[in-house]
Amino acid sequence: METAILCAVFIAVGAMVLAVYFAVEAFLAHRRTRRLDALIRSVDGGKDHGRAAATNAGRPEGLVLFGRRYPVPKLTALLRAADAPITEIHFVVFSLGAAAIGILPVLFLSGAFSAALLAGLGMSAVPLAVVWHLRNRRENTLVRQLPEAIDMIVRSLRAGQAVDHALREVGRSLDAPLSDEISAIYDEIAMGLPFDAALRKFENRFSRSSDVKIFCTTFIVQRETGGNLTEILDGLAATVRQRFKLKMQIRAFTAEGRVSAVIIGLIPVGFALSTYLLNPDYISLLFVHPVGKKLLLAAFLLEGLGFYLMRRLARIEA
Image (cartoon, rainbow, N blue to C red; front, side, top):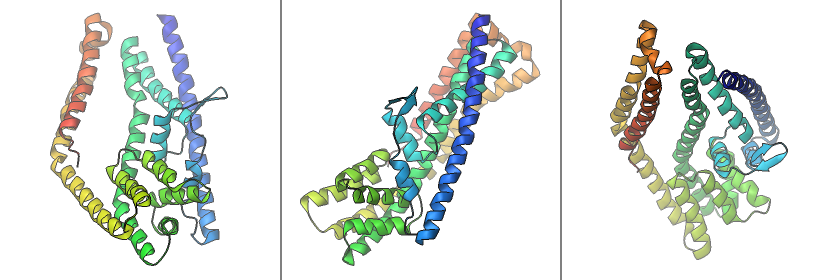
């Protein structure tokens, strides 16, 4: 048992050191990329807005371990949609480092290996939660910008420009994140990628968004079957605006339920912490007694299940 604890401590400390190193490295690389992008825009007069994002979209994908690349498409798509300035291996190391932050304090305070393992498992999900939050925030911002982008495309088409040139104007004029994604589509088309394939890549990066799917499908179907694209896009812009308005209304209506779920879920945690501060010996039985360990594990599982069910009950798809 002591050997297992020592090995766990060694691995946890190593993961923490690597996580800090990769965090600093990712931050410096992200800052260099932003400075280079700003320099390019200043030299070109703002014409290449989003070039950095297009370059990032074409970076090698996969988890690199010992010189070999292992494809992890779901993780790659998640990091790309969140515009996270890290690679897949960075994400794995961050998760291990977060797990170490959860394991070490519990291990040293209670000496219970099973409780420390549970704490590490919970903390390892923190980087995933952060990336999910960044992805959702970026996706909501992109959907909010989509009607304006469609209106700009319609105006460009009515002025006699081709679709790819209309996309270029959108990439130049709008703000991130939509300008980065549209610029990436235009750059991929300019490099020889078929128009349909470039749109499909954009759709795959935001596969959870129905609005993005409708946007891409509209262009692809119109290109295959024909029709008045400007009228179709006019209707699409109005539809996206109404859908986004409906989503915001639903979010406002379900705010009370979501807040109640958070409060109810935090009550057991707050009670456990206060009990530990007031009477550590009373609650320490959960960490040392065999039955207490089982009850603690059951409490963690039920707590997670409760959060999930409350979130599903308060979530209505628009």
